[in-house]
Image (cartoon, rainbow, N blue to C red; front, side):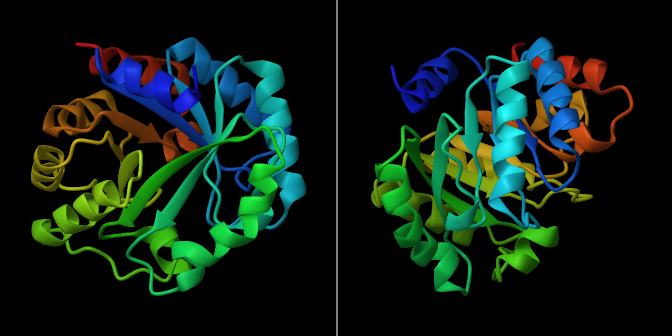
Length: 245
């Protein structure tokens, strides 16, 4: 079974959690340790990526360290074709739909398509949009941020992703955001689409994760928590547990 199909099968029964590890935020050795904690805590997969990565070597070494420390699927979350890695299990082949820069919508995908074709990486298509406040991802991605009260536009992007044949849709508030994607927006987007909904940005504790899941997210992503929480093992375990309730 493919990684995408396995994820879809899992979310038929419960909400699930992904851990996002940014190779630019710590050494590969520390990234491996974080992945080990994430696996212990019950996360379903490890996403690897970030907006400020500077070399493929960073990505390769981080993926290798993660795979040496845990058995979870590793899914690249790349900001560009040059940050793909043969060592990962899969890649979110994602289009940043509300970017003003065609590179993030399709041109980087054209550059990376041959690499993926000639590797063993599973491509998982995904529509990706960034909501206010957006943070670094919004700035680097040259995004026209979706306003927090503009639910109609969020639904339009989500439906467009589905109609274009994408497997997943991701609503992102930005890594380190003080505010998550609004629960009302999540609820309305989920109500209007048939593909799985991923939500990330600003989710740092189990209460927030629970509310986001109840609003309709199928998959919750946490990233900054892995970098900053001194009680990471407990925090992640609590987040994963509350998604199973």
